[in-house]
Structures are given as C-alpha cells and as structure tokens.
Image 1: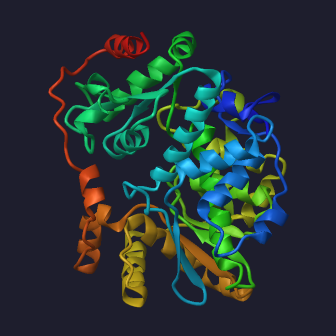
Image 2: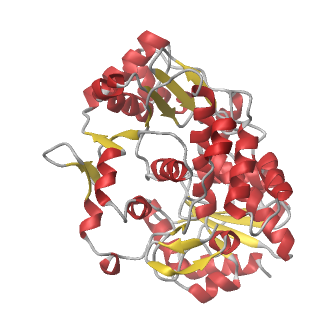
Amino acid sequence: MRFTSTRNKVDTVGFSQAVLDCMPADGGYYVPADTEDLRRWILYTDENTTFASIAGALTSAFIKDEFSPIICETIATKAFPFEPVVRQLDDTYFMLELFHGPTGYHRDFGISYLVACLETMLQMRDSTAVFLSVTRAELGSVLAHELRDKKRIKAVVVYPKGTVHGMQESDYIWNGGNIYPVEIEGSEADCHAFVRSIFSDHDFVAANRLTVANTANIGRLLPQAFFYPFAFSRLKNKTAGDIYYALAPGNYSNIVAGLYSWQFALPLNGFLTPATDALTVDTMGNCVLLDSVVPLNKRQSADPTDPSNLERLEDVFSANKLMMRNFIYPVKLTDDMADSAAKELFMKYHIYADRHTARAYAAAKANDAMIKEDTGAVVVVARDHPSLSADYIRHTLGEAPEMPENINAVLRPVLLNRPTIKTVQELRNIISGINN
C-alpha cells in the first residue's frame, strides 16, 4: 500500500516514510492512496480469531511491499499482548471496550502498535527516532510504558509545569530510560506553540529524526482500523442485519479508521456520533462537514500537536460527497440526554459509562427506528476505563467503579525536580542533546 497527502494526490510514499516523516511538506495528512479487498479474510474470522491475528493480517495488507508476512505478524504480536473486549448487552446493543490495555486508555492500542512498527523499521535501517509530543498526563504515561526496553526510540514529552504523571525514575533518559519529560513555565497552549514551532523547521526535524505519537501519524491511526474487524468477528454469528457503530467524535480518528475498514470491504452500515461544531447536520438532518467549504489550498497546515482528522474524513468522501450522508449520522445532544443515557446503561446493563460513552449511546438511541428497521445491531464504543471519569459517574449515578491499581499508577503525580524551560530554544537544545 502506498500513501499520499490529503493535499497532493500526485506524489506517493511507502508506509515507513509516512510513519518516520509523518507530516507531509504540503501541510496535509498522509492517507492510503489505494485500498485492499480483504473481504475473504474478514469473512473467515470468528470469535476465536485473536486481535493480534487480525492486526497481523491487516498489517501485511498495508505494508506487504516493505515487510514480509512474518515480520508483520511479529509486529502485531509484540504490539498486542492485550485486546479489546466485546460484550453483548441485548439483541441489538453490543459494547466494544478499548480500555483493557496496560494503562486503561484507548491510546494503548495505537501507541503500542506505532512503537512496535517504528522499532522494527529503525532496526532494519540501523537508525533511531524521537517522538516529540505535548500532553497533560496520559499520553506521556502510555509512551513511558511502551518505550521501556526499546533500543531505538526515545521521546521528548512537553508538559505544563506540575502535570507530569505516571512515570518511573527508570523511565527518564538521564537514568538510562527513553523518556525526557520537559516542564515549561506556561500553559498547555504554550506547549503546543513550542512543539508546533519546532515542527515548522523541517531541517531541524529531519536532522533530529523527529516524529509524533498522536494520530497525525498514520502509523498511529491505522491500528484503530483493527477494532472494527475484531468487533465484526464477534458479531457475525449473532446478527444478520445492519451493523452500526456508536462512538464519541473525539478527534474523529476512530471514525476515519472505521471508514478505512469499510474501504477494505468490512461490512458496516454507518457511524452514529454526537454532533460537533465541525461535524453536524443541516436543516434536513443530513451530515455536514463545515470545513469542506474552505478550499484545501486556503487552509492552515495540519497541526502536528493536535490533529483533528477532519481532513482525512473529507478525503474518504472526496469522490462522492453525498455518500457521507449515508455513513455518518451526527446527532445534536444535550447534557440531559447524555446523563439519561448513562443512567439507562447502568439500570439496564449495570455498565458504568463515562460522558463520552453515554453520549455515544444517546446518539444510537436517537437513531433507534433506523436501526431496528432492518433488525440491525449497534456497537457502542467505550474508549477509556470508566474509573477515569469517576467524578462524572458518581455525580450521575450516585456511585462509581473502583480504580484498578495499574490505572491508579498512571494518574500518580510525579515531581521531576529539574529546571523548567521558558523558550523554544531551550527545548531545541534538549532535543539536540539527546541525539548527540
């Protein structure tokens, strides 16, 4: 499979280049330039097919021109000693839980896969790379966990002062680890500005082999496409009708990844999601992507620190914009509708739902008639462990789930006892020092 930019369909690159040099020079995002028909393989899977097996097969389809099937299987096996869980709630509703990784965040899946891919690529090239990321808490914790014992990848993670969580002393570069947490005297917006400034210097990025660990990197986004064939393998013998996925919009990466699965011939009928300011409905109730009114050549460059993935969503439907109406069903929700959905999930199924899961379920319930018309099924996507939203759940339900120790460790504050920085140049010096 080759990859091209959302803003330039002439030039294509391989998977390795798209991951290592993750931000196209034209200001867009990398997207698949072609698709693979995996219908035969997808329809062959069943409830005994492991997530790692699905990931290995799809990885081979993505990068068979660069890596052998054995290497692809090895990447997937290393990345996924854990897997999602699909629960059947009733004849119509299922839940896909993405919080069964080591930290309880859905990011475990994407980052674990990206790290496994990147480590393999770098070993084959006898090279190294550095993640440069901004976070307030969980991304740094997930990166720290996944980079333990890695030989070729390091990460510089930029935090507002006092927000470092979930790291061990052995994780730090100055103690022989792979993470360099940097606290700045400023806000999260200042952190983004620092990192954005560095990525605008393409020569510095190339010289220091910088890349990102968020979904701006196609290597972080693509593994989210594995969720849907996995869910299908668990549903295929339990429903004969249409299959819809209800999910929070987030930065739209899970919707885009689901659409990539559809392009690989996965049977699915649409995505039910809370409307946002950018992805909403018109007066007729049809899906509208407001960004599409601005020509690509008039837009700012894609943000390497905070991707929205709307441009990738737009790209999927670039050949037929009307098709988006038949795949994405945004629903305008109120807080009361979300709270009622959370209560219903608890009363009917004894499920603790955070705000995102509750809103996804509310969006599904708003489309109940369409779903049941064809005896369809809905998979509600629960991204993060509910204990991470204990305050909301306790306020809504009067009780909250206990937090497992592995997740509690992720939230534990860390005192670095190192100087904070105030300028971009100081951050550049840290990055340069790591690579010398």
